[in-house]
Image 1: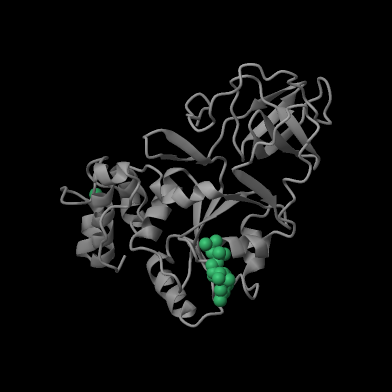
Image 2: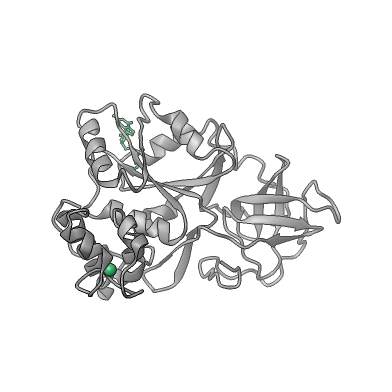
Length: 333
Ligand code: GDP
Ligand code: ZN
């Protein structure tokens, strides 16, 4: 995705004069260094350079960057590189808000208690895939009774589509697997309903939760402490995990019916074979590979029903504009 195409309506207006804009990177004049924005403080960003050093760098007037952005320092300026893995949603007033950029992995956390709303996992997978982010299912609280049954049920539905991790923030089970999934500098985020253990998992995975915030330069002359809405945490093994309040609304990320048709978990083989119409929604169209698979029972009827339920949710504009997930649907998704 090109930078130009990215709406950053959530950044707010830059102060007209970002006076004293200056680089404090170790790269120095002319020298170029690459890094990643790990925290955002209004007119400045905290960048973790690939060398391992951290630098606070000023944004130029009007320049926008969000946590997760890759940047290059050019003397006193920074250049924000094009991003992939962008999650955006609309807020209540219809403005676009960027949740995260450069995500490689989206961990959809589920637990035996509390259970996720019907359709949550399907929608999460479609959202991730639409943004070219790899979805993974993370069954947390595996120390609890009922977790194994849940994991097996999810495996039977999603096993052919996405990786599934059994973990426990409490006992540490599965922690290494998660770190490995992000090894080599991949950027991940944990999403899921409130109470499934996302914060607990972050705590279990990250040694030093203050890591990214520590070096904030308080003597910048800016005279204010802007709060950071999201923070990147470095994991053992080189992975990065983003922690942000914005992810609460991740399920409200705009996806269309065609995105669902292309990315619904379990439809991969049929979609790969291809339907007669490129914009087939797999409802009643002739020559539909998904309906063929359904007739042959390669796709289960309840999965096709879950898919139709998601389409109906996505087609309910008034509900979607209010940021809700649409009317409740029967379980079995
Ligand atoms: P979040 O809302 O998704 O961030 O969930 P929290 O991390 O706040 O956890 C919600 C509750 O679940 C807390 O009471 C945690 O102690 C509990 N919890 C989190 N992870 C586990 C786990 O692996 N096992 C058990 N038994 N409880 C957990
Ligand atoms: Zn079709």
